[in-house]
Length: 473
Image 1 (tube, rainbow, N blue to C red):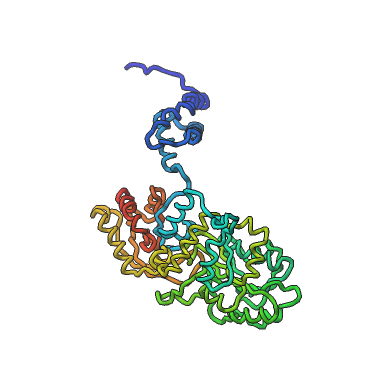
Image 2 (cartoon, rainbow, N blue to C red):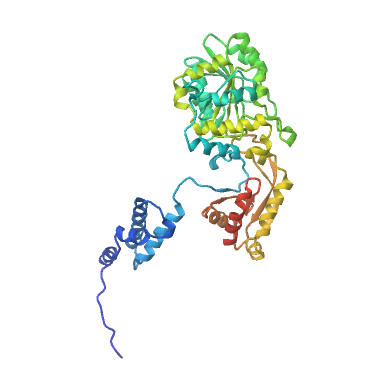
């Protein structure tokens, strides 16, 4: 029997040090990946950063007890995989299969083809943003949308800033700094990101004067609260929640009449800012901007990227004297819109004036699409999937409901159709994660151990990529 040759083993600490010394340097890894086709055009700084991250992870693995280090080629492959997953740009397109039409985290309203066309035209060259070309004099960036907003809302004048919270802040700071603003307790709302009406009031320099109760506020509550320090009566539309049951609220018309009688301006923050009455499509009553303007309220604020279906913007319409004061406030300079917002908003408003907003503005089209039409689009995806994929993923077509989103019409449930996935072998949460990490990422919603891909928000252009992603699962 031969004696086995004895070799002394290195202490653990010495072995780890030897493995760490054997790791390639950052430059050696970068050299291996810089000509990889998947990384063509990637800045060298990003290659270097990713190589450092991969090597740092490998060092941690060795220190924690790994018996060997990965070969240099394997480390290079990790760098390629990491950079390919991240892509060249952080902001990228995703497939919205959640069914939430105005999904704040996914960018809210999609722009119309005309708006995208106008963006390209204005972004690719110089424009008359603040130039009166006929007179060769400085003009106003707001002039490109002001006349449109006047015609569409019936207001005397308008001003557009970067979002609706800014519109409210600018109005409060201009009209009520150092004064009291009277608001119903039932309208002290909080929007996304813990952004609250009382906080905006404090930031504006105004003092909050609450009236009424959470569920009931009467005209006499406002009337009794008005005093020499009153700067504004503010009505806030509860766009992201509803109080039902034993309730009472003061109408826009009543509040406007009280304001005129007592010499106090009245502002209403509509939030979502719908220009069309959608009741004929099965939606509940929602006050439109023209309706509130006609009620006699002095100022009305609303968003550009919610029910209006345009770019992110805060729009204020109303009496020309008050709008003029807002425009002259130095704060307006910090909140003003750029040429891209002007271009997209003008195109969006043009669709309303032309009478084809329901057909051309994606938000309105998705909100009013029938369930039968949605179901046909979902069946188009099913036909692209192999029988094996159907069986392996437990594919089924189901009827569910989706939401408007964006803090608009919170009680509305839209009948829709979705493709449901999930089996004991392929659980919904695992499928959800794999689709989210794909290219492009697909975001659905998990309900009752099934992953739902809601076709109300899946665009026709997304279907080939979605079919490919499901096939690869």
